[in-house]
Image (tube, rainbow, N blue to C red):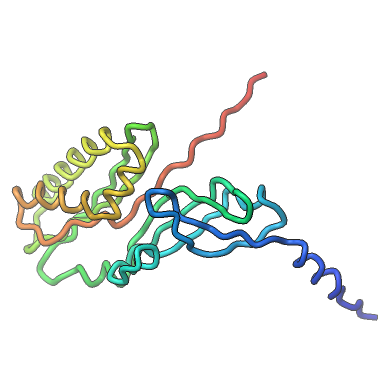
Length: 201
């Protein structure tokens, strides 16, 4: 004989949970980006929430940038986050590719002034097709330039520079000197998690 579903208990379980309002970090205005539900505040910490930069800034020309945040703390029914990375939509990337031109990708591991490890993926789009030696030169100047910038910035400053396009503009100025360049984009970033300390006691 089939068992009856315990509908009553399931409803009671949902009623016992609480909703928490999730906000972006201070440097992005503590903007509300959504709700999450959990049994208690401790269960919320560590969850990843996503939103587009367009929704955060009310600039829908920037919907192509997807931002990721990790909940770091909870106060009452409000949850506050820290930036953990971003990526750009595939449709936007496809729109940047033109015929008879090159896309040069550069993967750069960085360490900020405050010791945060960040991995950036930067793409350079040229006016004409670049050869192997030219692509190497482009990667070299991108790596050297952004590494020097990162060493002088803390993580918050770097995030602001990604969001505002400052990094892309500075790299464009540096690269166009050595090769005709149409655009430079920071297409992905990822903040590496801090390894947990192992107690030897």
